[in-house]
Amino acid sequence: MITCWVVSLLRTLSSKLLDAIETAKNSSARKFIQSVELTINVKDVDLTKPENRFTETIELPHGLGKKRRKICVIASGDVALRAERVPLVDKVLGKEDLEALVGNKRMAKKLARSYDYFLVDPSMMSIAAKALGAALGAKGKAPVPIPPGTELEKFIEKYSKSVTLRLRKGPTLGCIIGTEDMDSKALAENAEAVISRIVEKLEKRFKNVASIYIKKTMGKPVKVEIEEK
Image 1: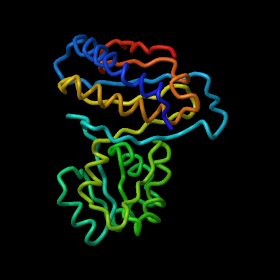
Image 2: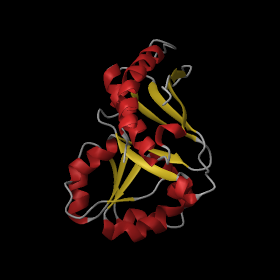
Image 3: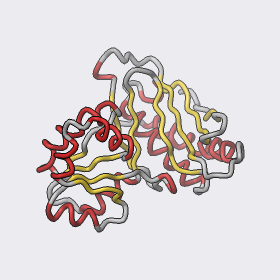
Image 4: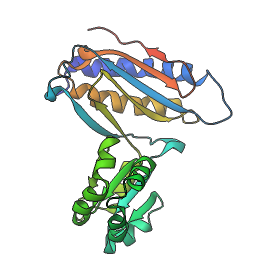
């Protein structure tokens, strides 16, 4: 549960994030649209303890602009047919496709690199794990089961707007929060969504946050000032 002072810090952080995003956006101009990246450094967290390690997937309220996630759906029958009609789906794999991947490590690795999220019909989970489990595990990805009866298009849309952060071996978490052509307030709200979820996972909440930075792909990190409580 987030305490009142954490809520207060998040409110204060909003304007600080906006300032940092504006500063970052006004630097390092390039001839291409750059991503805007968020980095959270934590402190006083013993990562040798399994309970302090986590992986968190967070849907961003304003999406990722031109950097939306690439989605691969693994399904058969009606689910596959419906997935093929969803514009946000980049690839649909069926049973025969997966069977052809079993033992083909090179192609499995290529697929694991090519897509951000693999959404899987539960009936296909076993063959998906056999064909892609090792390759996805090496990339820190995992097949995401499609809940039975779910509204498929909304489920896919959620993951097209999501980022995944991991606190494992080192005290740093990072993700993109959109692109520089997005509205700064939208980027700040995306950053807030990530920060609030990460803070919820930390035992001492903001007291475990050492620093927060915003940067563009080719830019220098801009520190977000955090008020001590």
